[in-house]
Image 1 (cartoon, rainbow, N blue to C red):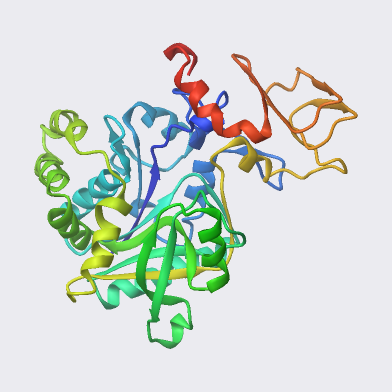
Image 2: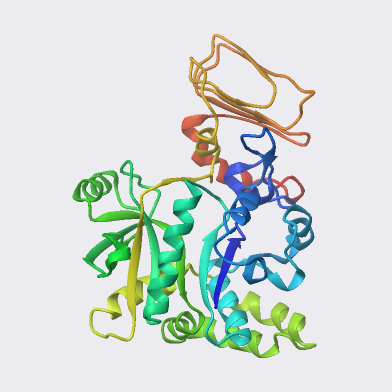
Length: 371
């Protein structure tokens, strides 16, 4: 049976002060829809699943502390569909957690791993391509399918996937390929070469695989995680479920699924047929809303390049981003250029756009009650 799991465990420190410990970026209602309503990234990610898998077969993996907030923000998800991590242990364990739970419930489970911090259009094409990913795994359960975004510029902040031979099948029509290798965040010169080659795509962090297959990969490549996840699976659905999860999950090694599974699997497939790493090309609009500059791309710019969400007035300014969640508060700028100004009831951020990468360092130095 087909399932889908949305990973929603990120802290969102580069979107402070709107993203905070009690309301991480996935739950901030700051994305405008055509109706004028503002919704969260998680709500958009959940809505994208319509027509892909039925509601009872959808999961969200998130911090346990956000369970009630998610239930209020995303109607229809029962408690059992929210996998609450006692603490974040990176994507390998979030994936393994979902795989362990699903495999116990359905040994034939195949599931998509999706993200909660991306804007993807057109959504019909997204669903079609994810559906083809399911087809690939149903045809061969040894396949680990990743989705690579057709790059539009030489990004240095994303990982890349290099394609090798095409996978045959009329319905795949030049979309599905075997993977040659994964490359993490290259230099600008190398990223330029990758884009020009036409053989690379951005690693989207989205996957489809059989629960049993990904668990076997963890057993081989990251046994420390596998052993802990098996303890959690054994207790799942019993009176010991919560206690075992709280005791074991924080001990799992913190590592991404790319490092823990995808990279060693792509190397192993060259000497063994027991595992096959594939990629599906996604030629669509994909925006990783992980920082204020990337959030600015969701807003229309005026003639001077200013982008505004909320109430603002500007004189003689250009290329500024102003964001406010208080409709009664006016943010005014005079003669400013290239600034990011974010106003909330509890904190106001002002910084040059070209120093947005330093926000994470500022956040780390704040007292816990202000994060």
